[in-house]
Image 1: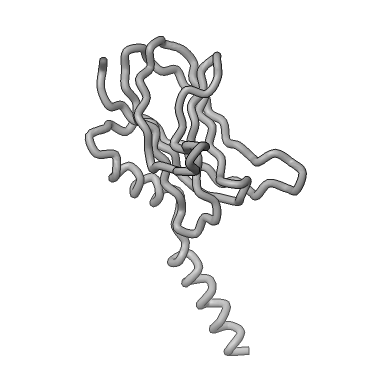
Image 2: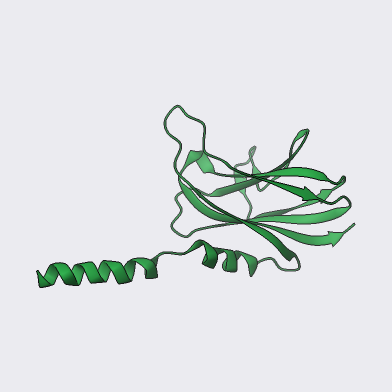
Length: 144
């Protein structure tokens, strides 16, 4: 019985110490923005896609201003099996992504120049429909 209680206490105390919370991940990701100014974060935890179903996607809508350069960054949890993909769409379709499909490269961030004020949609998913935990950050770089 003492052994059971000791194991229970160890799991209760050690579990949170080993995990990385989303707020900690936001802090880590925001510290890597460089010359950009933090505007908003997108905290994402998605389950793996079920066989025969499309990959889960987190979707956010934002109004962005014309003649402005923004940066979209993504930071994965150290325990996340999937790597985060962040994409931005306007009313015509995809206009930017950290994932280059032709080469398979995934970058930690990308900058985008917005030419017209309007509603833009930010999608976050994980490679191959895998389960994942990540934080996306929208930041301001400069006025054009």
